[in-house]
Image (cartoon, rainbow, N blue to C red):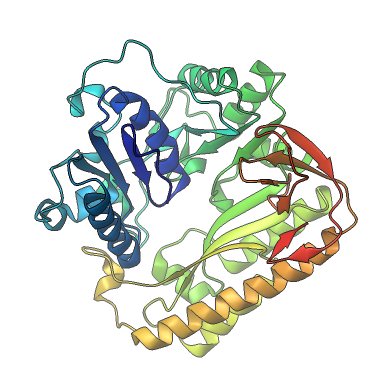
Length: 396
């Protein structure tokens, strides 16, 4: 969760990188009214909704005179419940949150421009798939793509603000272009960004559906040094039967083959993945497959979601597991990822890394390893460092 300063309009962002990218744009839209606090909510799990409610209550305690507005996926999916909260002054539809008219604030004379370490560019929104566990299509609608020309303007804006890295984000990023004329694949967009902005040093991609990686995108991930060696997969599970019940479009072998081939072509590429623990009907055998795919890939950047039934989804009508069992399996998955990550970090000691500095004295290497930087390293600069030890799960 990220928020802005309390002396001005404030945007609190929960959930995915797409929300973070949209929150930056919302911040510019509401900047002229310092009374406004916007909670850009998430509804991917029941825990995300709980955190949204928690953020709303905290804001009201800290800023009792604020005009508190809620948008995002929870504002669609849990609309009646959030509207009933006494702390909330109003809801802004997810589809309207990037429209200045929705916020009813004066047009600022000049848009504030903060220097940023990286720029998040939301190139795609919504989803046309029907994964049985997922409520996000209810909150974001059908897949829509940002045209290439508009993406170029967004990238240019971030670069002018000093961003050293661009992150392309979306709800279903690899479906970018499916709704545009001649249905261009995502690889064409990535190539266009790289060709247009020769001075862009680092391009990173948010979560990808591995089965939809097109040939040009594969070649860029495998061989283009400006595309960061960090692949985050929307994997969800390691057992084929559960993947089928989730209505995913890939099998376990597809993910393993993709990672092995990329690893051969680009040694050192770091693998991240989303995994769900305790999906309905999951047995100990299924859970064991989840644990083993963590080791087999291996997954060093993991997001583990304990399954929770979401309203209106087919999985919510399937036989549910005990909550305590779900929590235990989620903890075991996190421990397995922590183990693979520890071994991976150990292998990075003594290796030269190029790290993009954040404002807190740390930064991210090309492979998304978090690294402590020498004192005084300016935010937004690229530092060349050789880590010598690991403390608190961070290279130092």
